[in-house]
Image 1: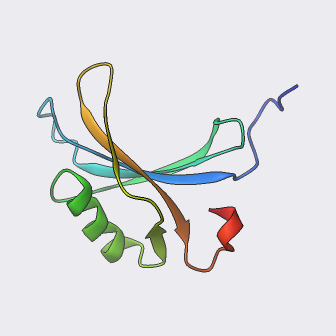
Image 2: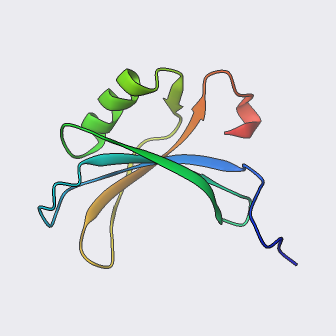
Image 3: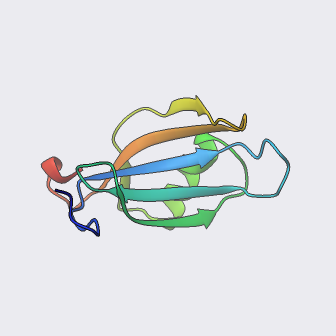
Length: 98
């Protein structure tokens, strides 16, 4: 049986978006999920532009110890919004934590 609240930090990943619907939502999310895919926590920050290049630049500036560990994977939401995801880890984290 699953615990009622996720607490185990198993996977961390970045998500960046294209402002497909022109809402002015230019941002990057950093998500942490447990081993069952449930969201443990997240944070987001604004960026100057959309897409992976702007996300990489913002991570270097805002969180210099955060590293993307996989290539960006393009996806399209059910509503038709383009977005990209990539696994990430902290530089000081052991490799098996990422």
